[in-house]
Image (cartoon, rainbow, N blue to C red):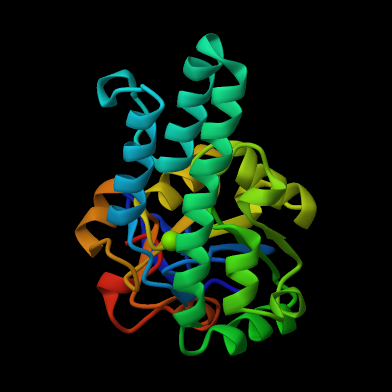
Length: 254
Ligand SMILES: [Mg+2]
């Protein structure tokens, strides 16, 4: 490639220069892994009601709020299990099943009213046409996701709900399982999500990360979490392959 322009160094010698390669380009990216709720679909899950019902159940089983250190509901259920198991294995099992039943009922009800976000199917198809592999990872249950997106398997190479993995994101197992199925490493993959935990999970396994503003998280929060890029909505990701976005605040790595 011929030099694009020349410059002088400190000694006044003319040096050939080539256009610098964009450090954060998606050139090497072979796969995009998406979160589901709030990223590819809208479900209007009432996390407040879920939380209240699970904590009421904990109280019924004699586990008090101050005994719980975890932040997210699925992890809270997992944390309570051994506490209860020490007292009564049958109580632990009963609590675990009932708690998951509560979550699943709320998720399935929300899924009944849920829908994929505009442009989701077309975007997934476009990525695959470009030769980019697509993964979908979610803390939601499989039945709820399939109720919203019945033909999900036609649009992605791997779909991992919480029913198919023991430790869900932000635990690294969830994303590393997806990458393994897609046969890519962290440097070759992008994690896209509407929640800070998607960014944290992606960064923890060395993926590039993209926050989308279709959930409750604000641009500043994504930037603070270290997201490589913030997009208004997931379908914009296709434009990152084509050109530097006109809006510099939206640019990759900005
Ligand atoms: Mg989400």
